[in-house]
Length: 253
Length: 263
Image 1 (cartoon, helix red, strand yellow):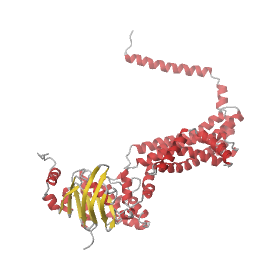
Image 2 (image 1 turned 30 degrees about the vertical axis):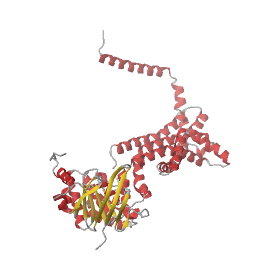
Image 3 (image 1 turned 60 degrees about the vertical axis):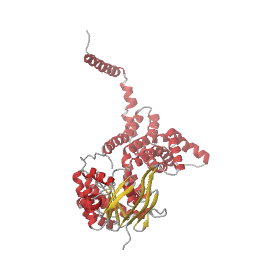
Image 4 (image 1 turned 135 degrees about the vertical axis):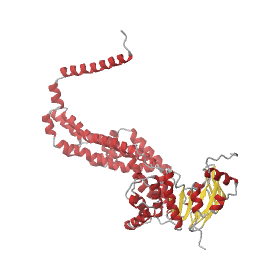
């Protein structure tokens, strides 16, 4: 058996007196797609951001592809090149064209040559269906296109794990499908993915495992069909009832 | 007969125009046009000022300003980074520098570098060095605050994206933050260039040779020589040739970047 891609043990994170993550354990096998769901403020984004140390954990251990991220002596920049991240607000470099967004880190961080970097960039633009936008500036693209470019930018670093932090939450509803389509294709190709999302349909169809978080804890985890289709905990049930049927009013609320 | 509010406003405006017309007419009759023309618009003197006023004075003003601005920009960037440093003493030094040099007249800095420091340390700077250092020191104090504000205006998500791609803190600053910060601060930076253009006139108190004269000193020397205001007027017009387009550019850039959100 190959070693797991991500192992999180006893993860804790506090912002001052506010304890956001209380005790998180999670193991993600290589090639697995894990969707993390939960109400806002449950700590799911914070957990994801701890994986590549955008947030410094207050306690616990995180190992990604055998590299202990929480080791104070780790070469964090080099470790991050193997972990792609996609943000809710895209965060494309506003001053660079699409193609340069995809090549800048390849060249300056991975020290790839200009030709190689551009080849890889174009290949990844093709994967997200935006070959014709190579020379556009980010501001000229729709939100959905920007997010697909952001995915291509992360992929251009040839990562082993991809983190998605609510990748479709800032998009107009009609643009969500394109982005989810790209993510689904990525999952089919065998990419290890951690996805914080509110797209239950996507989680149900694509995820190998679904994690329900609330109040800084993992309340429930398991195969998508079980967690979403047949939740065991009351908190999971009431959350899913509210998300899947927003007009429904829970009398106990 | 009582006037309505609107009639009164109209009458009042009429009176204002009337006063203006009277003043202009009286001035036109009283003024000694011959003397005014001789003092301000003496074409004979003007023709004698050319071509040196362009190829010596205007050229030197531009050279001094460009040198001072360039060195000042680099120094200002260093100060801005110091001001944002996590190491407190760097922040203190930058703050003291900025507050000090923004608070004293630029003229004082020129005096210090031309007379004070050479006297105290037994060193001698050539004039170009003096002007460049003095302008850079003063300009840097203003530019540092502008650059700092620009760096802080770059959205945090840009930094997170760069770091998540494996860029180090310094690499992120150089390739992502600073280029975007400069886009944001281009309009105020243009204003600081205008300010330095005018401050370059302070070289007048340094004894410079003819080929080092800039507009103000050139105009002043010529004024003494030709006994009239014309050279000063010409010098002033040439300053405007530099500063008005820059001001226009600054407003254009402001409109260009101001309306659109950088994200």
